[in-house]
Length: 188
Image (cartoon, rainbow, N blue to C red; front, top):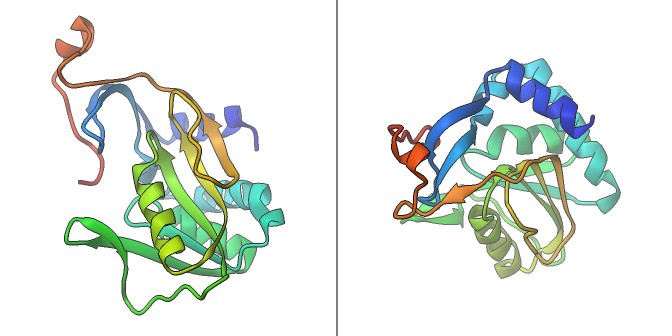
């Protein structure tokens, strides 16, 4: 699947939004990828998951781990496509943590899967958890990389869509964006 084909899926499902959005990081943007809209249709999940799994199959990961909530659906589908175990990290006292009895064995090859990455904060938190448990980080896979500059995660990174999206500090909004009411459509 090409980046253009994946982008078309987001457009056709209404998952690529235009307006004034507040991102999880607190920064503002004119574009927002609402992956939940694209991932509500299981045949679409299967197509996107297969395309991402095909990019990372050679990494030989034993387990896929995703940050909740955004990465859950695509992470589980990538794991299913690879025939591997799937676990997730979730918030505990404001930070991501490995819970629910999930374990990462020392040396276990881990693939981190996320839906959308802008600055990579949740991916970095997930990588820190993998390393705390002495897991072997095989790579990172994401549906959408919307960062404006390359992010070095210390492992190979793969994406279906690479679309650098301009983001703004809330105190430095361009006039056209400041004139539009801001919404925060994602998870908190």
